[in-house]
Length: 409
Ligand SMILES: *Cc1c(COP(=O)(O)O)cnc(C)c1O
Image (cartoon, rainbow, N blue to C red; front, side):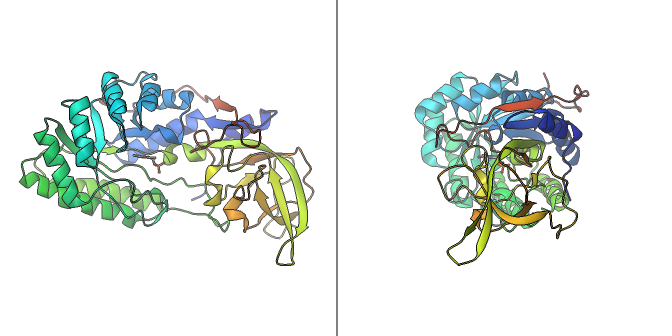
C-alpha cells in the first residue's frame, strides 16, 4: 500500500512560507472513520501522547473518540475537548499517589494497572474505580517493543484483578500493547491468545470483565525502514485478526465483552507532514576513504523527527522535478541529517543514503511526509537554540455526521 498525500496537505505545505508541522484534520478524521468501519463497535481511546495538539483532539472527540491519557495533564487536555470523563481512561500503569488522586478528582473512573502495589494505591486514592490489567507482551515484530517496563504475567494478572476485587475496585478488563508500529499479524494473534487464557481463568473465579483493550501499535503506512525500503505493514491482515480475535474472546465468556483500542500513530502519522528547509548539501571524505554526500535539513531528531533513527521519512523537494526513475542523473544519493551538533540526528542511523536533487540550495523547501505522530510531543526545547516547530492545522471540509456511536452525548 502506498500513501497519497492529500491535496489539502500539499496545498498547505506549498503555502507556508517557513518551517511548520502541518496536520490534515479531515485526513485524521477519515482515518478514524475507516478504523471504526473495520472494527464495528470498537471504542477508540486515542493515545494522545502521539499528537497532543488541541485541534486534532477536538476533531477526534467530535467524531466520538475518547482518549488514553497517561497522567493528570493529559487527562485535563482530553477533557478540554468536551469528551466526558467516561470517555477517558488513565492508561499508564506508572503513576504516583498524587496523580491517581488528581485523576479521580477530575472524574476519571477507569485505570490501567499491572501490580498489587498500584492496585492498593488506586483503591486508596480512587476508591471504587474500574481497573483493567495490562498483560506483558514480547513486543516482537514491532519497531518499538515497549516490553519489560509495562505489563505483568498471566498469573500476576489473575492475582492483581483478584486483589482489586477484594479492595473494592471493579475488575473491568484486560489490556495489552503489542509494541508500536507492530508489523506482524502474529503480534496481535499472540495477544488475543494470551488474553483468552486469562479471561477463562478469571471467569472460573467469578470475575466477569466487561472489556478487552488491544492497545496501540496499529501501524502507519507511509514510513520507509532504516534502509529506505517501504515498510508496507499488513494492515488488512492485522485488522482481520483483531476482528476475529475479539469474536473468539466473546465466545469464551457469558458476559458481553466490549473492544477498546488505543491507536496513536495509526490515526495521525500519515496525515501530518513537516515543511522544513535545506541547510546544505555537502560532499566529504568519510573515515572509510569514500566520498559521501550529506544533506543537512532544518528539522531532525530533536525538533520533530525523534523516530528518524528507526524510520526514514519520505522526502519531497517541491522546487525540483520529481526523479524520473531510480537512476535520474539529476538526483544523487545523500545521507540525510538534522541541524544539531549530535550525530544521532540522522535518518536511518546515518548510514543509508536516499536520493536527493543534486543542485539543492540552502533555503530550498523540503516536505517530510508521514511525520504526524510523535512529532509534537518528542521535541526538545532550546537544544542548540532550536525551538519546537510551530504547527498549522488544515481543517478541510466540515465533518460529515459522525457514524452511529453510543458514546456521543
Ligand atoms: C503510546 C501508547 C499507545 C499508542 O501507541 P501507538 O503505537 O502510537 O499506537 C497506546 N496505549 C498506551 C498505553 C501507550 O502508552
